[in-house]
Amino acid sequence: MPAPAARDVTELLLAWGGGDEAALDALVPLVYAELHRLARLYMRRERHGHTLQTTALVNEAYVRLIDASRVRWQNRSHFFAVSARLMRQILVDAARAHGSLKRGGDVARVPLDDDLAVSLERGDDLVAIDEALTALSAMDPRKAQVVELRYFGGLTVEETAEVLKVSVDTVMRDWKVARLWLHRELERSGAH
Image 1: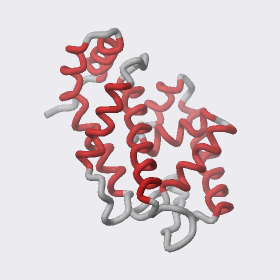
Image 2: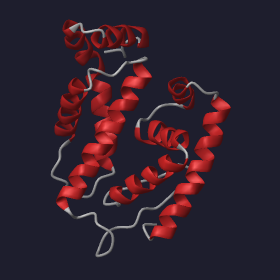
Image 3: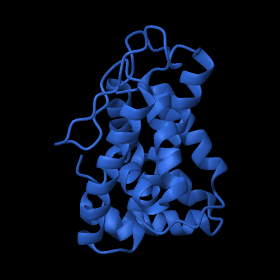
Image 4: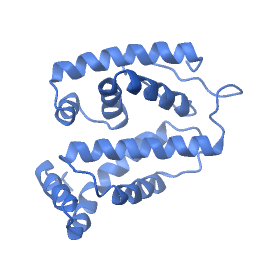
């Protein structure tokens, strides 16, 4: 099945945001495959034996998205950016609740790959990444948003620029600086 047109998704998001519950029913089938793809990407980065399954992550994100009906959706990219943030938060919450990703002990270290900006692999310390992104957000919220949208949300440079309402060049600069800052912060905290 071909991907739905961004315009169709955007129109349904705007209608849903305006209170049209039927728009949500029409939206879900259009975005489910992309939400599932995002969830699969997240779950590939999780430790072996993680109790949360891909479909459960999508379902939990869906429940939280319904609760986020007060969000003023801008477009398809904005929707997937919010979805990515919710999935990341669900996994961080699960990691904290499980207690297996605390600093120290036999926690796997988080490698940063210069070519990929932030590269998480199975078993990595998602809590340390979340804490570093939170610290970056306190200093420079846009740079943290660029990381979240590009890496966690899977958005292209162009889509990220559209969501943040900045130029592509600005996204590229922010991406580069954020990558370096996160690398340094994770090394400093001992998570790298």
